[in-house]
Image 1 (cartoon, rainbow, N blue to C red):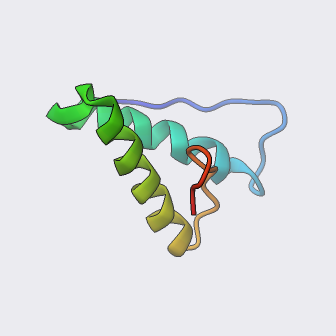
Image 2 (cartoon, rainbow, N blue to C red):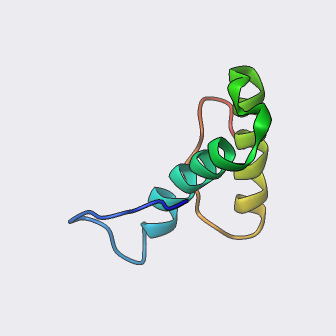
Length: 67
């Protein structure tokens, strides 16, 4: 799988916040057989985003109430 990112206003200060939500969602859809379960996807992506933030990666919120 591949996730492409391009944009005129993207640099090293906001790259991670643009890339990680899309990359996480794409990997969920490609490698997880349970990805057809929409409620499950939201929880897993929110949890993964929290892990990224704890690791120091400035990933954008997945939705309201994200860590």
